[in-house]
Image 1 (cartoon, one colour):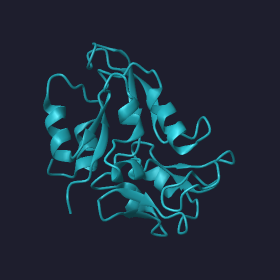
Image 2: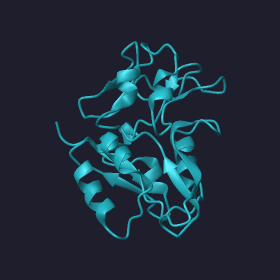
Image 3: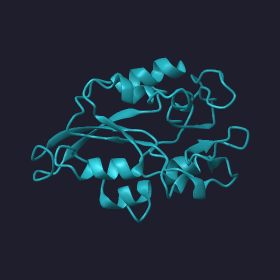
Length: 193
């Protein structure tokens, strides 16, 4: 199996414009608030990166973790890993218990509310009310050779897309400010990255 591609935020580049959220909504026909990526605003430590304190904006979505806590927490086996390494939700198996939501340190899976639209594609459709939903990496776009919509629409390149090897290299560069701790990166990339 080849390395699973992932999306990782570069907080130095994020300007909190919301283009990634809108791209997700538009691509999947989602109502506002149901997007599969969210810009999270967080306060940094006074001596923390990148600007010595203040507010940071972090685009967060499913990282399709190598050691995905959501998979091990799911009591029905609805959270699975595909042949290409992506973490998926089998909506026929999901019972809406929210164990995946509680286990994810990144807040990626969410339980879709009543405003969720009807499923439009059997494999990668819109969220179903009462069931878990999360980023699919825009898999139909990947199959066509395109990047996920959030990555291609970001005007500041605040979303890095690639394999763990490519992303690990980018995260070591001085030009990329990483919002994730070493423990979080270990979950995402696996212990050996």
